[in-house]
Image (cartoon, rainbow, N blue to C red; front, side, top):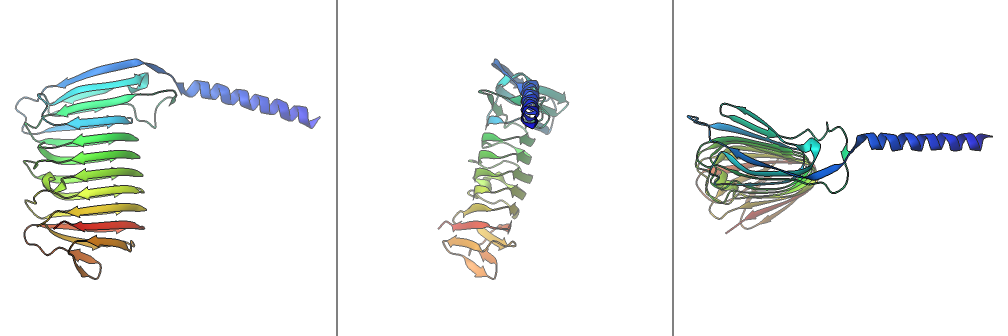
Length: 283
């Protein structure tokens, strides 16, 4: 008598789950393209740009003719971007990935390809879920830069000096892979990086205009730090990571590694629970 009852209960459970999955399913639609062309605010000394992306592929390039120009391609209806404009503030956003009314199924597409102007100072914020990112910030006038994302594969470039001082630069990511090139050109005063497990390369190529500080908090990670020839750098190991591999010439005093150069000082404070640190002093 028990087996038939059990079988009926299982059948009811399966049926219930099937209905639930059907209710939360988000089907794909034909590809939609939104063309972006945001004008440069009139009489603005500085502007604020905020991008909030659900997740997918995000490409940023410099030298746009307008404040922001490019396209957003998506094939999930809930991902239709929204625009918020107020004086010198522009926000482009999609639905919070944790608040979607369902789960996207099938071959989903979400591609942002945007160019930014380099004609006036920008306070730039980029938030997103899991994504593949290529951010070329070369020559942009960045006064503040905040990047917060989920598990991602990210490349950031500063191939020419930031014309103004980047007062604050924060980079927060989940378990990811990231390569940041030309950080010396970013012209930042303070940089904070927080990450989950992953592989990270921080290349400080460029010329320091003033003293700069970097705070790195990470989980079980491999972090490669590249100091260009001639740059004065001090790296303090403040965490528990003991696997530090120096390359090039370093002066070691307890848990502090220093290059033997003069000029503005790059101070890097490492706080890793476990991980591998490669310190490269190019000569």
